[in-house]
Image 1: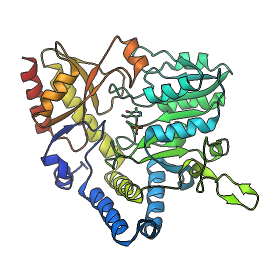
Image 2 (image 1 turned 60 degrees about the vertical axis):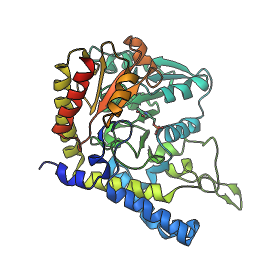
Image 3 (image 1 turned 45 degrees about the vertical axis):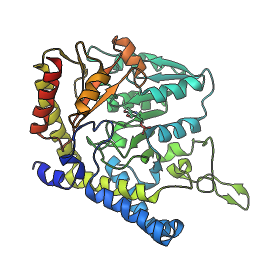
Image 4 (image 1 turned 180 degrees about the vertical axis):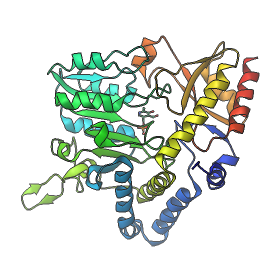
Length: 387
Ligand SMILES: Cc1ncc(COP(=O)(O)O)c(C=O)c1O
């Protein structure tokens, strides 16, 4: 059964206002998600926000349970965060690695994660890519030498359609007994995820990308037994309540949460997650693949366009450059026509950009909401720009 795109677009206020090809940056919220957020903010304004938070506590916990279902985890393994960097950074800091410790990363690792590793004084080694641009499993196996303290993988990068073989990496990393962190910013909500199959200890994702939730909230999976090893860099009354014998770290992923939160955003995330579960991640994935393939085929025929995607399996993020035009210029010109396009410099994926001699890429990222007519309009506008 295919996705009823027309019905979903009718329930998404942004789709008739912009031609949105920046779902990898942040997608368009459904009206139901927006309504859940607005309703909670109104309850806060009219009845007091602490009281309004208490009134929806069970719904927030239901959202946590639905996130667990989405990832193949249990609710106590899920923490709400402020986004990917917030979640990944909290888990990383709680690992308490020491300067000089060795960490392995894929070449497409997110720049923010690399910055955390660098600032902690770690020895960061990038595992070389294979002939498809994916992390080389042979090289990884060789590098897992008993000295490695963490393997960090960005499952799908910000600068192209590549999807890394996260489960195959997980099998090697598990066998070596090394902590395994996954940045799934570009993955959760666009394809099925099963954390047990992937074998990761930590996985971070935002609400705002393919899940189509609000900005400023995210989710973090922490494997139950692994959570015991995490010593948060800072705690509060929620993560380490003080009892008669002093502060006691909460069990599970919640030791990485903060006491203060925005229930409205968590409720919005919950609605978005339920919508993804109802649609089915296999169907979402199949629809996105079809649209992205269609877009790549169209772009390949545009004079001056160079497709920049690597990998065997590809996401809905289509990266390209246009000869003679800067990314900022293309993005700004299309914006005047109501077309939203992403554009990255080096900082998001410095290792991969440097390895490939790229300084910037444009990103047209599709969703299951994207239509063939939108792709035609976008490619016509781009063709006119290049002419
Ligand atoms: C792969 C990847 N990781 C991390 C992030 C950062 O996410 P956040 O802004 O939620 O911290 C992004 C944002 O685009 C991303 O694409």
